[in-house]
Length: 465
Image 1 (spheres, rainbow, N blue to C red):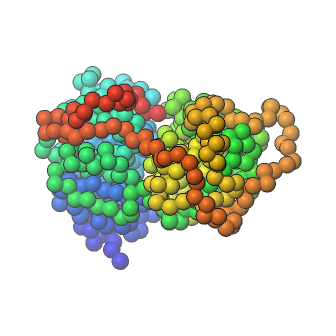
Image 2 (image 1 turned 135 degrees about the vertical axis):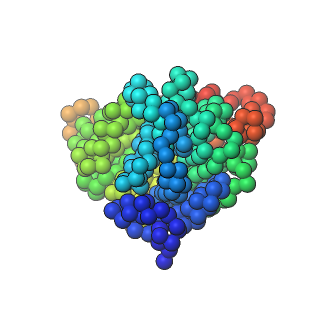
Image 3 (image 1 turned 180 degrees about the vertical axis):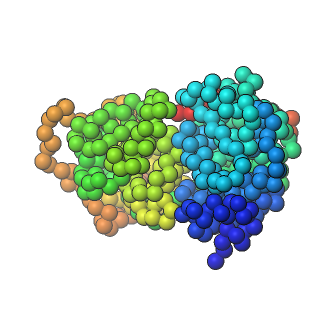
């Protein structure tokens, strides 16, 4: 069996790992670490929850330990970019573990926090800067940080950054980084846009892949329940009452809808909280801490949380609303079955969401087992409201203080139900990947688009969700 010592990591890093639960490297770590230590550009593809952070973090820190002197004022030696505040925090926490007992200095910057305090922390320089793109651009424009001596760039969850419209922000940041650098790109899925960026931005990269793109962890038991939009809240209540006290995450499509669903669950007696783009950073941090420590049993979230929650105890995932980007389904359900554990994932599919479900099944290359109901007929799908309409309020909600109805949905079957194997019929799958383009050396790898896009997404500089 391969060990971290076999990979040639610094004794200081090995000493820090001995005090953690990192006992043996995962497949993505075994394949990626040697290439990164050799200085090669790398594109890593692996299922969520398989240890991508250590796959780039450990060898990167190994190389930084060889430098031997502190960075200059406002200078950055290595930059790690991630799309959400939660993911940046998760990466920072992992790096803190990896660097314990070393002189490596870490700095984290995200939107929603004091930019003045972040500027003060950057004034003396840092070895590793972990940041969301929007806040980093703010600091660059203020002259609070310099990337002129940055020799390492890591893009984590690159596909999600593109989907959130960060391609424009990445181009702006790339202009500040020297062309002579090592670039690492990690993702759980591989849309065409990522391949184009990899071709243009990485130099003769090594491609490391431990599972087909879009394939979820095998230990996740998946199922889909066909149900009208107005009955989803009651069905969710039924499922959650089958496992009281077990951590569950419920994914909604909109910020307002997720908040109202959370309040509805609280009124029904569940210990629920929510995180989404309308919450401040302190509110989101507090809610995640309560969920992690067990003060909350249920977390209602938008896709902002799909890439930033690393809580091993999450047992159940509910896709209350189907995601409008099929790759997000993989990241959502990847919040369970972490670190080799098992988990379940149930999707609720209303008539208006048949296209989204079919797009997910196309990505998975197989149908999701049916737990209840049957695929919606084409005439029902055509008559249904389009995705996003009437999604702001969980339908079927009872007034505050009203007693629960005794009747339960007859179709709420347990996971032991035998999959029916029915394949949904209906419209063609619809993709929703962000539009990205090849770059060129003059822009650090993120160049102008090949062709103008009439429906191109605007720059989401504040899209830190």
